Length: 160
Image 1 (cartoon, rainbow, N blue to C red):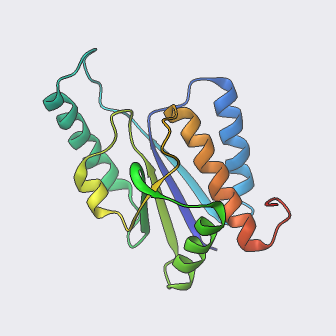
Image 2 (cartoon, rainbow, N blue to C red; image 1 turned 120 degrees about the vertical axis):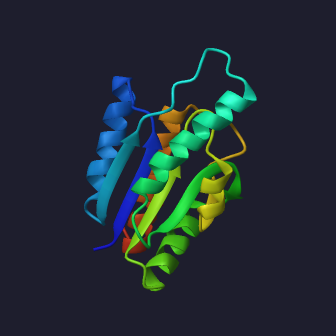
């Protein structure tokens, strides 16, 4: 069975996000070995300078690099990434599986983004939209889209 890891910076606090995320995590397990890794965001002062932000992103990068599964296809979610449809995501995941890779890893960075070296390491840069979303909502949206991509590949009626 294919492995999918979602790495996220920070923890969910609101019950409604926790509940929604848990539902999609549960659903994903019907299609793949799914794992969610929550990593701590680097604490920054109230109004951080660009240098402080960069230092924080570099410290987060060290944690992220340790958690990306070896030989996994790696996708970062970033505003400058490519905007694709649900069907295109399903096709991309099918291509990854057909390429011989046994795992994929997706990353949602912290509220300040992610270090450039993490973006440079990615096999694909994906954007959810040109709009800005709260990170907690983005997590639920990514989980739903990963589930939808798996459901599309399986021919499920979930995707209409």
